[in-house]
Length: 248
Image (cartoon, rainbow, N blue to C red; front, side, top):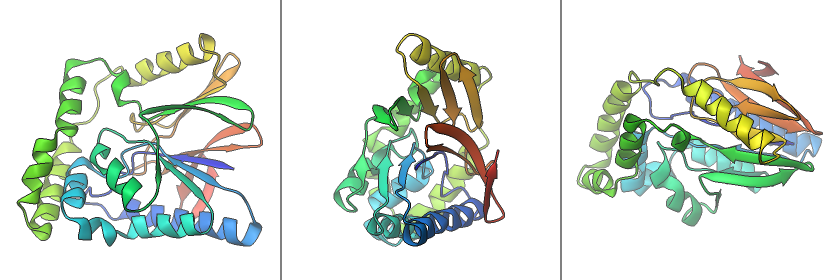
């Protein structure tokens, strides 16, 4: 069974989505332990908010003590395969997650076969061709800000990160982004013959039938608590609500 989540943005001043995610991960662990279900979890980027990512990366003790990372390590110890695709907000974490914790880091776009289905997976930030999107992407991947956060103490760095996260979360996406993602998925399915295209980034959960395939957008864990599942060749969009799993 394959699970797909994205856009948790841990570090935004809101503990609800973190608590919900931890409970969700614990349920996956219980499924693996008690029901002997083979589970693979794909995290399609932006697990952490950008400014929090800088603080975590600059001050190793913060990420070593992070409760979500600890839950993911428990899942990994139970045999759950975990794959990370870097998003625009957590790009700087890819090396530390690989080297320190042994998680498998995939490229920004990843093509694979799951349950005999040809699947295309990605966060999707580079699909948007706008100038603003390209500019912010360069800022997010800049090492200058990371070096700057090295000069802050860990408590100051995480405080600054929360303030900046609150500001950046108000500057959400331009109109037309969902249609660009849909067009991108349509091209992959009709021209490249993919069966399933799975993306994140838009924060808008969506499951769309496109000719012989499906486009799935995992949505987010800030307000929708949505995620995708591929089980026995059936792709579905679900949400996590009040500690239970239900169809979106």
